[in-house]
Picture 1 (cartoon, rainbow over the protein chains, first blue to last red):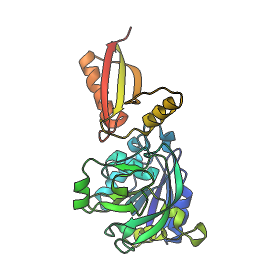
Picture 2: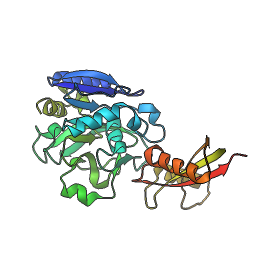
Picture 3: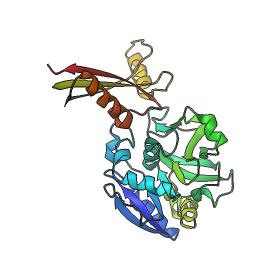
Picture 4: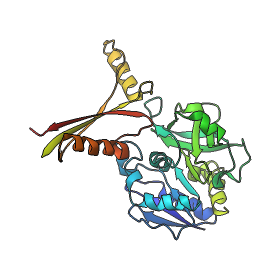
Length: 216
Length: 83
């Protein structure tokens, strides 16, 4: 499966994602923000980082670049699209997933391992997990607090993908830290599966995100 | 004609503002007791346009497409002929 790994000025998890995709058996390729045509790819990942210095709001400027048009076309063709951390913020800014990821409840950058509950396994990325399985992956963000004023709709439509298990470190609504679109093909998650893709990193729980995508 | 435009972006009422809360706590350290602290972002620029109303419409479009996130923000637009 050919997978585009999107790079913006300020992306910094692109190589980690590329490596994790190779581990999962995918064929990743870096794509720069000004490439509009993504039709040769079967799936897309927007990795984490600090695109455009997080100016204005995290993800706001990346959300209006040419590559976003290509991503929207891929979504229209039901191709799997995953946004991780800054990638999740970008997907929320575009409106491809509902809600926003905004400043943590305490004014602090949080970088640590978290326990997470997989709330739905209907997405390509969570298809290899059991529903309600608890997995371990790290977070690293200052703007990760999930907020949405239509939370019931999200629950009714099974659009909550990941939630913190136990402590809610950033004050997210209902501990939510991963959401998807109505179909489930577009996923936005604040935790970093690529940083939990090999035992040497402390956990390999995240690798199934990429395996699920590659096998989709 | 050239206009001065100003966009004031604030969080919707009830939205948590960690930056403002931190500033309020810091003021308390200096023994200033203040309440309802807010932080508001102001973006200013000049632009050419045919009349105040058309310029306002354009700036409103900018707010919706880039400058604000409608889920969490309110905004106010000020337009004045350039001095």
